[in-house]
Length: 396
Image (cartoon, rainbow, N blue to C red; front, side, top):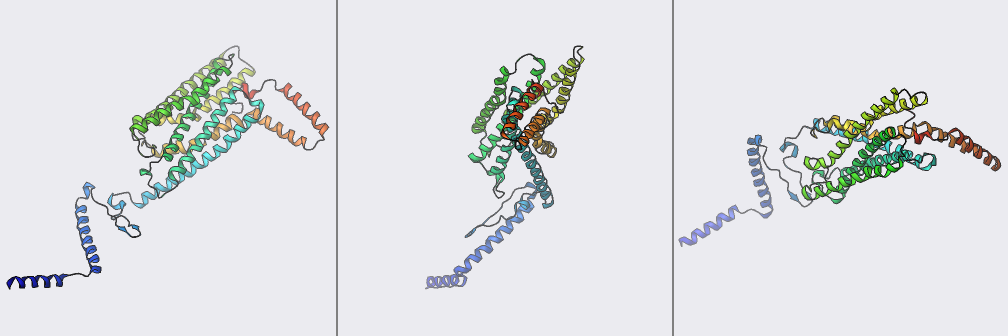
């Protein structure tokens, strides 16, 4: 009888404390909230250790927002500082986008001019065309990389690791390498032009091709294999592992130091030639133009890169970004301007072709033939050897 009373009392007690199923969910949420509050209090006490938890609940329509927010839990910078950084990066992107777009248009135009006019077909201009192409590839690689890596602002770039983004970064690194090595080729050509005056440059052309395209290809293959087997993280656009990063950075730095030595040697040769008693008249003017152009091209050929070559990657980031991305994006435009658009022979040829076209549109067929023959004879007698192929930058 006593056992029966105890069972009835237990059943009555469970009935008194039973919760409706709909209310059980609310009760559980209240308990979870209380547990979360207590956990949060413990985290605040241990805030100096920067350890804790962030929660998200899986609902029928997806995940809820993290609690507490990342900014609060990880002690991120306040919104004002974050907004300043965002504005700075946005301004920098607009600057280098405008620079690379300007360079792209001017370089493509210069390549068309040097390719379409047979008068400009010579070893010197073939080297210029390859340099222009390397700048075109560099500008294109920047746009491709930005499109692949940063087109979706909601995507976590830090966790992004796809074949597409790795390919975009690899192509970008190849274009950077070829660009610097073709700048080195320009320096080598200028030195051989002065030091070996009576030697044909055509036999050296394939060596220039090997340096400009071959060496960067070998360096890139080594870098890709190293990243694939030893540091296959993210999109390969980080520089955390400096040993691997120097596979790319080392050859670039070496090419720049080689260019510095070449330019110093070119200046030495020019000074010696200007002091030579046998130089005078037109030769003096020619060497003076070479000296002026050489001095002007020293900062153009990436010498600013050597300022940051041996410094940590996070040193002077703002200045580095503005120099390498902001000012560097207009480098292709300046190269096309100096080597093509400001060249006196290029300007004269374009004016002659424009005048011919305007004249031909207003003459009869018989007069057109006579004018064309006369123009060819006058041009050949006035320009037996084209200065655009035999000289250097005549407009500087």
